[in-house]
Image (cartoon, rainbow, N blue to C red; front, side, top):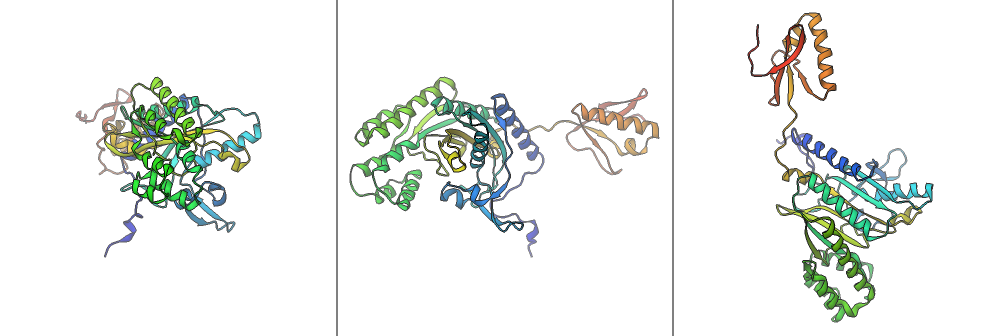
Length: 402
């Protein structure tokens, strides 16, 4: 009989040594990058009241949010599936307190929980690190967020990523005149996301609008595909052309600031949880078939909390980055044998504990044997040794004098 106590829920994973240490090292590196770019760290709660966590964010986020009943209040709680919504709430509260319209830069890193995996073999408990810029409506803020995202990926070992740019304004402007129901819009959104021309065509009657939307999945490639988009959508209103021009300007800014990125455009690239309403972007790596980072502009979500603010930002999935990094080498360890730690005379032992504390305070890793049978681990390359009235280290393989 299988012992079910060993099993984890479907789509839930865990990291063991040394990869858990490697992930924590990466997380700290990413937070240091955010700090150097002037972003302030926040630590939102893992659970919130469901109505606050999902306020105005649509069905996609709702479907990905695990719900439980709070035994203290009887209200529904949600386990966060996304941290951007929490950053919006935090910024809105701070903006209301200040009421000065200042630009705010917030960052975070932590676990989110998905009710269902977002792709084949993807974890339901990804670790996300992200950064958000509030109060800056211009394309400069989008360019800053993208440059920061690429810097984070570079520190995660991603060389020459593929950056895909899109703009929600193109899709939104095209369907505005179609007078679709909310259900039809949702189906059409999904059809464009998966680039299914057949499904797109089935949602609309024959005509110029259907032809335009069916062409979206084919408008992808180098930046000059935007010239084709202008020609294809010239008859569909100024809003579409404005979104295309804004995307072209952002692409030029990205190219100017980031010479080592493979830049692409995809007008059928639509954002995940549905709250983006401007430029959007995703970063990929040639050896991985999924997006490592996603982001975009989502102006106005702060109104849900009483303060409408322009906003742009991104998040990065940290676990997939481990696959692209070089082999992780744990910090070398100093070994203290059981005989030295527990069998030496009292003055030597007292001096040993002081010496061990000094080594650890200096950043050294020290492993003290707790039983006579315990052996040094593979990362221990030196050992403690009493010599000339004090404790020192020697190579672990060196013979020890009696």
